[in-house]
Length: 111
Ligand code: DGP
Image 1 (tube, protein in one colour):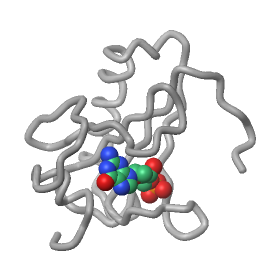
Image 2 (cartoon, rainbow, N blue to C red):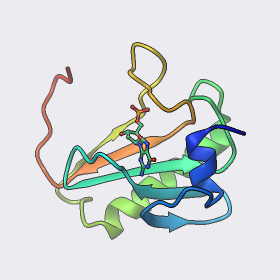
Image 3 (cartoon, helix red, strand yellow):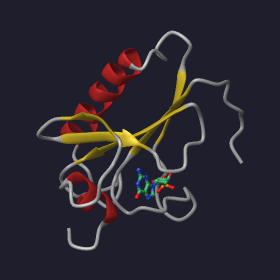
Image 4 (cartoon, rainbow, N blue to C red):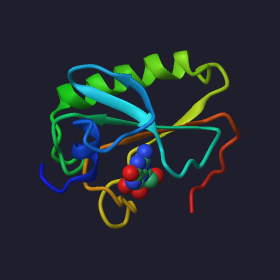
């Protein structure tokens, strides 16, 4: 989608610190990391949010999250998977993305 930041990152028009890529998804380091490990997983196809995405895409993204958690060495210590959605969810980029946050102990409840 034109003018979508994450579509432009997915196409390579805007550079990112890439962690993983295949024909369906891209994973890259968050520009403003909130933990020692902070990776975003996005589908290359544009969906505004998880509300619009099909279960196959979401399930595939989940499988990449698990693979990356192992590769990033945070599967045993644990991590947080976040999908901010809409206004109250504080979603700032309107292209579905999953945050993988790890490498430190997380707080609960979130603010
Ligand atoms: P959210 O608030 O859930 O929509 O998270 C969007 C995230 O995207 C936020 O943590 C910062 C990150 N971000 C925004 N712009 C860029 C960018 O240009 N490059 C990268 N790598 N991350 C970005």
